[in-house]
Image (cartoon, rainbow, N blue to C red; front, side, top):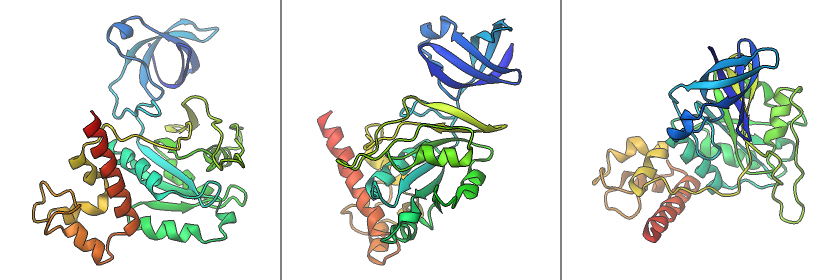
Length: 293
């Protein structure tokens, strides 16, 4: 049997990258009985049935280290969160949603801010001031070639998912990283200032050995239904050390509790208002969701 990784899955066919090339595979019926669906990113064993035409069958799926739901990709180790300085304008709340979901999956995080050549209002500096002490923040201009090499370094040795709203330039950035990709790039709708969905399904793109990226559909909103109220604070990493000093640290939601060190740090300017506002907005959203169900 051959060992490989699923790069793409369409209509029940899976395309597996192996040391002997790319194979088109179907999955054994036993996976349906086990209610296990192969995912892009899975490491699998395949049995070749037609070497000439590169046809095979998936016989085994290895245990996953991570499993994303939206987009459905396995074994991702890094999240590259892509936002732009304009068209569409940056949304801190949406950016923090992507960060929370990436933290929940235990992913390494880098933030790429695109279209900095159009940054007439110095939006990049505002974003960097909020996140520079928390995550790697990379200014990118596909037009000028700025930041491309820095993004490449972040991708080395990882399976990376590119996440962010439509229209921020995820596909353009990938095309800049590897000019051979020729990924479809959408235009921004002038009417609603939202990007059109140009990426139709999740797939892994192999840049070099053990270096893969996923070009995935952009989303304008994300649900946090799988996160509990007392869990959310764990994914705002600047809260962690302070939380142990809260008067009721085990039960403190950093909202209205007395003796909350996070609130004190906010008042002292050591936690950004933007991040804390995002936290409270997401906390209330989770509470509302739990009440409905």
